[in-house]
Amino acid sequence: MSKKEHKYYETTFIVDSILDDERVDSIVNKYSNFFIKNDGEVVKTEKWGRRKLAYQINKKPTGSYISIEFKADPSVIAKLERAYHLDEDILRFLTVAFDKKALDERNAYLIRKEMVMKEREAAAQQLQQSAETDKAADAKPKG
Image (cartoon, rainbow, N blue to C red):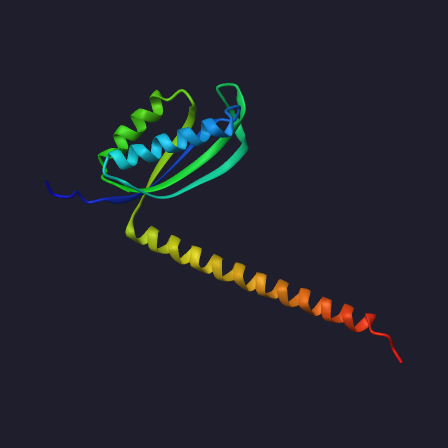
């Protein structure tokens, strides 16, 4: 049996916000296991938390957002979306495929973002050290 070509996908879904964290975790595990059973690979899972919806879905004003990045065969997407439709806890979902160019641009953006965050942290540390040095100099008795 030859291995099929895997593509890179991201699926984001909204679950009812009244569900407790344990139930949300079990839903995330359910779909992570779904990808593994279908010869896929989960790359990253993010829980964005409870957010106010732009409009009510099934008379619910808030929902918990979950994003899963994965690699899988394109035929898995139809099975995944069928599972989403049948799952009563899922209010909405969106699955996006990344082509090579979009994936490269995204990775470059994440690298730039990480560098900016490191620069900000270094600047904040330097500012804090400078403030501590000034404070210590002011505390010395003059004589």
